[in-house]
Amino acid sequence: MIEESNWTIVRSTTLSGEPDPADSALQVFRLSKGAVHKLQRSCQVILVMAGCAWITLNGQDIVVESGHEIHLEPGEHSAVVSNLCDDLLVYEVR
Image (tube, rainbow, N blue to C red; front, top):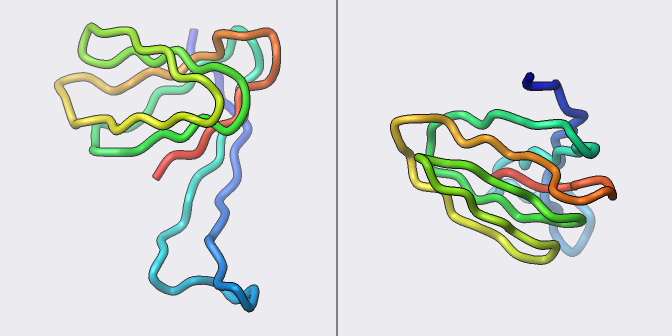
């Protein structure tokens, strides 16, 4: 079963603290153990900020640890992200 995750939209800022007009909004997701999130079928970058993500895309399983990112190419099916650890998974989708 696919559960809804908690997420927020954040924007990058310049050094002065103002929103960076050159950067688009980022989505930050939080998944507890056992929760999954289905992503749209588009070219995206996922940066794991905390925890460990298990990503399934086009029949392949990929594990991404905290501090690492992965570039997802569009495919026939949507990517599914799940939390592989007991701790909260926090990741950003660009």
